[in-house]
Amino acid sequence: MITKPRRMKLGMTIFSFETLTALVRAALIVVAFLAEKISRRNINMPSTEIILTETFPGSGAEADVVKVRRGYARITFCPRKSV
Image (tube, rainbow, N blue to C red; front, side, top):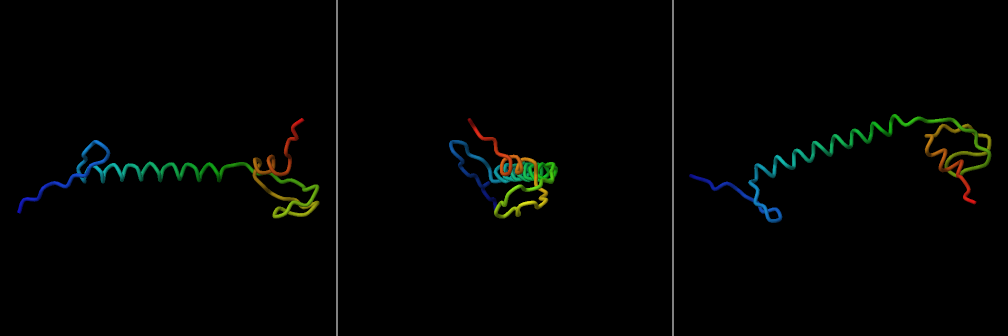
């Protein structure tokens, strides 16, 4: 029995099923690579210890020593006041 190759239309281009499968696999590999790269970047972010001068809900009370990432400390605990 001779089978006709399966084809799918994507936009204006017609791809074979095997080509679409290869494209999806390649896309998944790229997504996995980017997800791993992003997760590594978050792990390597430097952290710092700060002493709270006032109570912050969810972070600690006054005089607590809290270890947080530098960006979070800069944005949350030491905001710049615009003039």
